[in-house]
Image 1 (cartoon, rainbow, N blue to C red):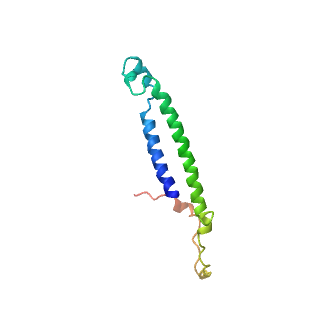
Image 2: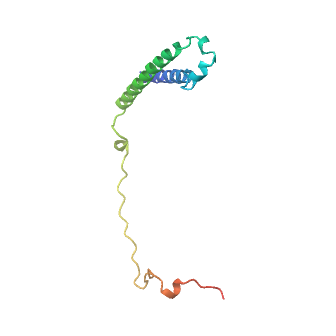
Image 3: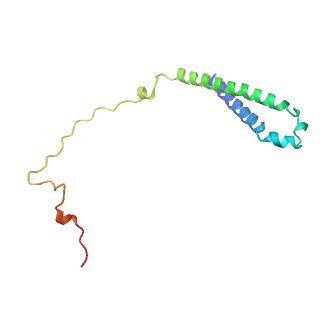
Length: 123
């Protein structure tokens, strides 16, 4: 059933793309007024607008409906609800003690003395 829905989804998507590309834009009406030959089409001067827009609306509704059905089937197929449930947690690693710092090592000062902060200019 899932494969059949995917094939139908692809066919509906291709048909929807074709119908959208066949429709005239809003600026095409100005060119038709000056004799661009729109009245000689298969559907007539204004007949294609209603048919193409209705067919596009029906195909868009079918596309969304099939998308929802596919989402339902994918969700029903999975055994767990999320990816977090599927991830296995690694075994706890043993704690490693940090090496001890020898007493004779002193940390560096956080701020340099004022004399050392000034850049040295070549003489």
